[in-house]
Length: 532
Ligand code: DUC
Ligand code: ZN
Ligand code: ZN
Image (cartoon, helix red, strand yellow):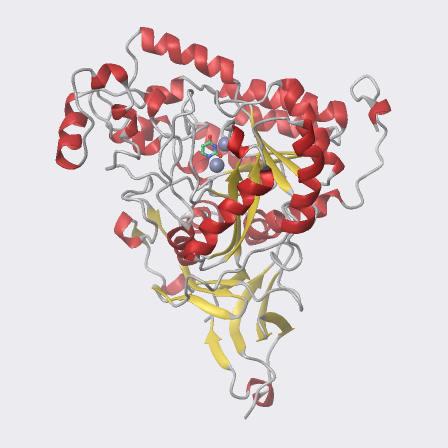
């Protein structure tokens, strides 16, 4: 008998950012059509049925911070590695981890040929179209210069033609950082176009100075990367960026906050009613300096696998404070910052040896076994290691195991941080991030908790193109059983059932959080009120 639905999910416990309710979901034409306690046999008809067997059913994950097919210039001198994942491999990994939407980065560079943001986006889009994506995707734009003409003419076109409504700005990295006045220029231009400003907040001068001091002392092993960026580096930069944003009343989202003292700055600004938002990531809740030191020795490069910026925090008490920030609303979103480099590759983490002039003195560039031999003999230097770790697939399962299953956060908070808020912040709500009639039928269905056997992760279980995971050996107490994209099952019972061209490009609108902004009194000692 014909059904009014294409797909029905029964016996689920649906979770939204506000509610946890046993409920069935009827899906039609890729959209959520009906939520009901039960369906009649006429309603069920010949629709495909998925029995959730009492498990959580949530809106599909929205990962708002993913690097794919991106040339990453993350060394202090703008050196960088080759991104290990393209749209196909990165998105299939995301799908296997319960994510149905990702926002990736198109980046301007300081090359004259890369001045035009539109051209940068067109070129980046061609990379996405070359392989296709298993899940829906959009782009942020990284802006590394303040050319007035480009900002004036191209930002409106990016919003109108591409639906790109967020930009990322850097306060560190020689080849990307903006000065304070340049930050203000771009923030003001973004504000005029309803573009959300994302900030990488680390004090570049402090890092550079500490890096030189560490090198003078011969402290160049991968672990010392963390000591070149102690938490105060992030504290100073968030403090300064909050002041800059306040000066012009510009909303700001701090990406990848890794320290409790930076989170405190964010919290204080929020308490004053400022539109300041923050993101944290799995590496800051699951790794500490201990992980960075595990293989610490002058010629062991293994610890480069954990090098990311900002680094993971010193200890578990920092993690406790970050968890508190998830709970009390300091953090608006929880993203992966998936930034994949292979370990055993001359263009991956081992760039840290190959690019280091003192290690390479009298050595020829090499690959394969010769490279492994070189790495065993030479120290390399943390300053040349590409910054970033993979994690698009493990983002939701890590927060499930460490946060939800332990009772540190509620199921509603889980959905708010991983799906609803990123969709709201980046102009995708309620198409994404919601379980409402009319929303895209993007779902993640977990395993019933009572029958799931916890397991320890090994990299070969994952679907990215990276040869390691920083979470090797970690215990997981659940994992997505089904991932559904606009009504199509793309991951089921451990198998990918979707295809690389299932994903669609998403044009985004302005941030939902900007709507109905409060008319709080503005203090002219802190804000240039005359500007607007
Ligand atoms: N910033 C990111 O967002 N990802 C990786 C490296 C970096 O500096
Ligand atoms: Zn960054
Ligand atoms: Zn990133």
